[in-house]
Length: 510
Image (cartoon, rainbow, N blue to C red):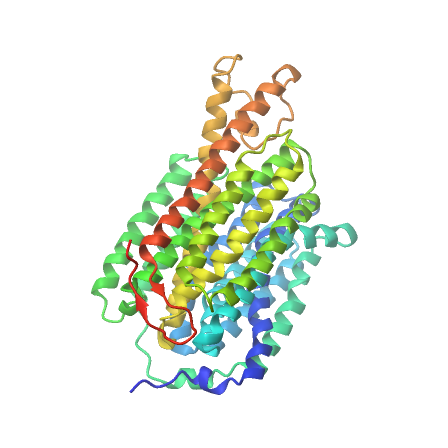
């Protein structure tokens, strides 16, 4: 006889809908800190006398902490209780945000950013697990829609909020802004989400070798990918960590089949729909991260937009994302998750494909159409993927499943920035070096990012065309990644009848 999950039996309807804003805010603040810092980097460099390498680590340290510790946090949540570990992650994130705001030098700020990533790993790994615990299956789709919508908007809100804060206050305010969000989130979770009963059940021992292998492998791969965005595929700094990370992750996979109590339980590893959802999450965020990177280069570096202007333009994507994510929750009552995810991936591919057609002289209405369509697509596919991934996951392993799902998203974003950036840069450099100026490589690195400062006037048109070629190739790769997700969705995700009665599933006929 299956024991019902304590959270689902204890959390009443009213308390569930009070808990939902807290879980949404937790996802929002994590995504917010991915982009809000970028706006403040010039000010931080000036006031803290930060070297370029320190600026790189102020951004990268956060991503590294997130990627490396998500598996550990998910495993701890399954053993100690989802709510306690989530609350601990929020507290660590808040304290490190305060330390970042008070940082007197670049080294302290980098350390605080890594600490934020550690706390953020606990938040990312377990917010979805707590939501899965608290909501019964028939209400989970709607809740996941809100969670995906608010969390996703945090990414686009970073440049807007950062630009507004910096226009009136100092750079430290971008970190102080986290504290009231964290405080409200902690209070609401304490009041509405029970957690004591979760830890009372017998839990398997922690898979220490698995945690070490997963953390080291993810950290090495993420480090290599982060470095590749600045030093494309330099052997010592990029290829070595990537190769080492790949070997360690391969060893981790092998260990999971031999371990008595693996970090990723067999019930999760053998769930084809869950693994398919992870792959779709990876490919879609590869496309999303690469697309935002290159569109930002187009408008900020090539056309001279400010970060605030760029962030405001993203509202054309964020608002449809919010609406579509909510619509996805309602559509799940009448359409299969596979249909929703496939439609979202196809719409995302259409939107990114529209953006790939941009040129420096294109009217912004073309970009606007691409933003809106891409926003609708991602608004459908993100909650749809999440619902597919978590619908058959039992409470005792929800932390591990949530951690693996979010790791695929983090890794997809990192790969998108590095791989799409490298492919676009290679196309730009090839076009530039085979131009009428011969094989000169003067300025090729800056041209690859759309920065034409220092390029002689008689070379400007050719340099702009070279960047444009790289842009089209990079966005074409992003479009192809989303089309791959369409194919995976059709072939792997289980068909499930809408929740109007039966909960039966059937395998896809494709």
